[in-house]
Length: 475
Image (cartoon, rainbow, N blue to C red):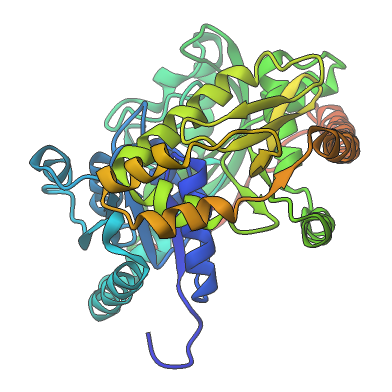
């Protein structure tokens, strides 16, 4: 990037939260704007729906697709450039990145300077290649970021284009299929008549229809169809399909099921303003030398302090000890589903440091976790001979490693009980605010849905409207 220009927006794809914290701290410290995803599937969707200058992709992402496959899907859809990160450099790891369209491969143990230099080089290469087919990219970006399904259909009702695949909803993956195949049989004739109006009269129409999802549940949709003209003729139609199943249930006063409840809670939390909470956490950390982070269930990290030097420079920077960190992270996720009577999990990680995890729950839906670490209790014993031997085996400077261990803050158990009393109360306050946001969201949607349902019986007005040339979409 040119000197003095804004730093790039980077999507970090890393399934180990503590490693992500360290990398976010480093990159934000160098001026980059960082967003984070845990899994490959979510990273593909986010990278293609939003504008990023670069994707930093861990190769091994646990369950689901690996980083190589995620990168292939991103680049196959002309998404942002991808640079791979890995704790391994064996052929089996490198082979996962072949034919993926990646811009580089960085070994996590290479050091901060190598990482930052590699990012600058990848951004420079991407800038040199940018600019091709801009108009097409803009249209695809508009379509892919739309919350609704957008179809293009021909006069024979066959699907020519769809903006995205939506699992469990209107079946959107059948290119070449008759769009009526997605509609319940009893709704097909009326929908077919509306489509005919678009092609014969050049009118824009709306229609209510139903479809069956893969789980056998009937879903309701509002459909809007408009003509696309070419040389004075209607050559295709654009259909915008909006899922209004939940709105319909709200209008009828029906309770939301567990899955819909979880969607509403997550949506409410996605709009939650964490800035005041981050300020409070930062002030607390400054006075008490406690490291605190809130991590949402979607992987969004709100941190108040950087991780300790021993974790950043040693444990998380080495493949052997990093694997132990990952093992601890996965173990605590299991424990969080059955926290102790205290309401939180107090555990010692596989590398010997203490962490505490407090689940944050709204309406029975866990939306995040409050983490406190890395520390030691003042009665925790440290075997310096064993630690020195570990440093020797892993190629570390023993004195520096022991010094880093010595920098880890120590607290009495009574002190940490007081700290957790504060954070348990803070967790209840944040959860209470989140609950209020959730209830407000459901109430407003219920009111909006009720008003919408009251107007369902009103006659629909079909008005001719030229949507322009091939590829135009309804506003």
